[in-house]
Length: 326
Ligand SMILES: Nc1nc2c(ncn2[C@@H]2O[C@H](COP(=O)(O)OP(=O)(O)OP(=O)(O)O)[C@@H](O)[C@H]2O)c(=O)[nH]1
Ligand SMILES: [Mg+2]
Image (cartoon, rainbow, N blue to C red; front, side):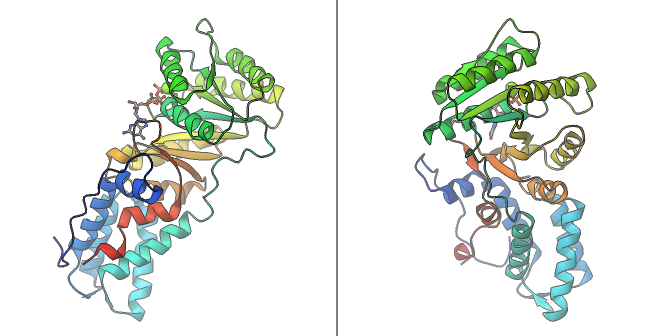
């Protein structure tokens, strides 16, 4: 426990209509707890920045899954600022980190623009179990609620259960699905799906793919083939390729994303499962190293638990507002 008196940080469960900042804070409450309490526990009131404190801050940053690049950046900045102001406190450090993180995520409020891309084709890729299918269901609901016509293509042809799972999400989201339980290769289903999307006047086509590791050559070739088939029908498509990352695996998601982007083009990231983990800080490391924008984050298993990524809300949710520090 730090020296500050604090109110309890437990947040009320937000309902569906809750404001997005509240949902960020609630969804990221485990990471937030680690950040806030970890940082507070390092400090007394207005402590002098010496090597002992710097070491403790460094260890804290590593434990928070920020990775070496981001950690060094923060420590450099602390040293720089402490030359001007030797008695830094926890709020100073927090503010300094807040600014750095916002800088890292600058310009990320992009989402998926649909204008001038009818239909906009989005390919969803990632390793097994990252949350691709769930994300597609949530994305379909998100855009369908905005009055867009969404069509889902079931291109995970490896497991019958994958099609059934996607079918359930399509029903929940109230959107159409193109599937072929007999198909053995995904490109055929994708080809039919894109044509169906055009003829049905879809605004957005979401393509679910099987989970794959970046080093499985034949599976990556299969993905290339899917891309070629899409481009045959719509030359500028896929307009987006979203890599879905499991946010609960911390630094491993950085390794995964780094390898994946070496072998296939990726235009945006979706980071899932941030609700169940204290490792939410790893997103900062991923974003800093890869220069690929985060477009959405997953904060739960339900239809409404996908939020467009907002750097400002994310950073604020991690640290908590200054106002609730008594
Ligand atoms: N808590 C939580 N769970 C999630 C989230 N997103 C996905 N999940 C869960 O993660 C598990 C895997 O999700 P899927 O969508 O099936 O993952 P996938 O990438 O399609 O998996 P494969 O098709 O097998 O490669 C499921 O149990 C989901 O409910 C999230 O944001 N939060
Ligand atoms: Mg799946």
